[in-house]
Length: 166
Image 1 (cartoon, rainbow, N blue to C red):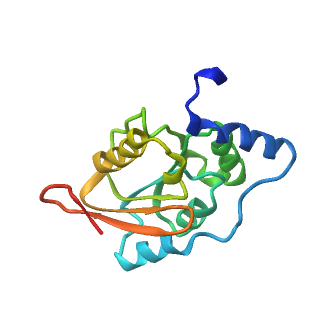
Image 2: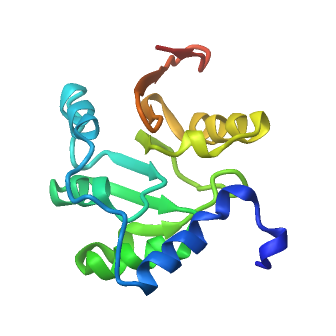
């Protein structure tokens, strides 16, 4: 994709490439504790399907995968996905490039989480598209965890009308 045609939220591709070319990464190997806290609190089982939107360099993906969960970890950045595949070769098939605003998956998930991604969508239509993607890919009794850069909100989609409840 040509640079001038890219969407603003795709800018992280260049940032990842620049960092990786210099031999550095953004990752902290310490995972975001709330992800495993929610998995444990809601008694999710390894055979249930999980989706991570915006896995970056795999900080949270690594923990979830190492605990035996069926996770599809996604990011809009091919550079970030390549990094994860190289860093975690045993889980290479669990990482894929995804633009949740223009792509669709033929699968519904028991748990969808996204850590420090939603703030990247500065336009209302993009944030709405992000939430619509989650709504359309979450099982009717599924759980979504959306964390901004600073705080977390647990969203539970009600089966009857798919409205959000906090």
